[in-house]
Length: 331
Image (cartoon, rainbow, N blue to C red; front, side, top):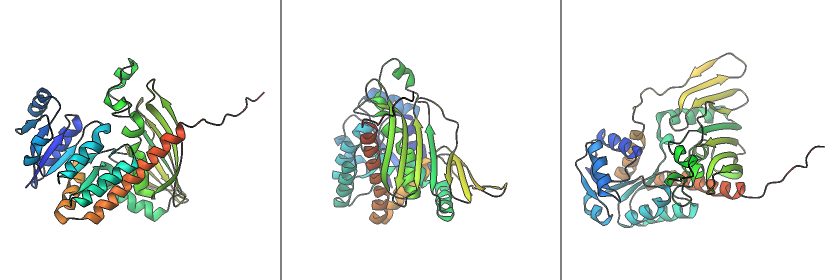
């Protein structure tokens, strides 16, 4: 049985722990938090009886895998440490803030013969497999992705307080915490991104809160994206070809997936035959399969999706910070 340690005490870690409980191949053995008191509260809340530590060294003898769900800005250094200690790493999105760091992590994983995977949930869902197959069949040329979700931290932001997700070092706001979803999903569906155009609204500390993005993929498909952590959106996402339109809700779970024909009043609901309510079980299963089969080829393929997405986010950041061209006022 593979032993798993966790970093973080947020809701996503609770969801991951529940996914582990459904899998007979793993057990949670260790929990890290900078505060042992916080770790004890989290352990009681999640009915865990595990070793609780406030430093990484104490974890090493008790784990084979580390699941990292710390603030975004800590991902690279923490993943690097555990990979160098020859531990498998499941790393929450975004894997890092720059492409070169993800490439470095990939090379360290290969050198140490351990598996590294970004926990990007959408591409491991049964619904994604149906969506990808349908996308390949209808040959789209344009997609509109909407990911607008009111942050639970907005009350702090409105008081000019910036918790980790909106911190310029630890989180970087909507750019890395939210935009990663539509950007990486677009790359997985339509192929590598080669060009970006972008604009953003920023908070007083210079961190993004709303983003408008246009992507051009290498195959010349366009993806337009509206992304916000300041509001709850209602619009569906859609993928368009000459004869068909695919619509769906919620980029993280791909709900209500429907295929529409252009010339007929015809809709086909596309659903997976069986799904697990805990959507993290799918990424966990993929990760464990990579470990058990030593499938470094598939590991590299998945990491290349991450690398392309992080590179696109870097390009978006540069593009939206450039001085725009202004049109003269019409007299």
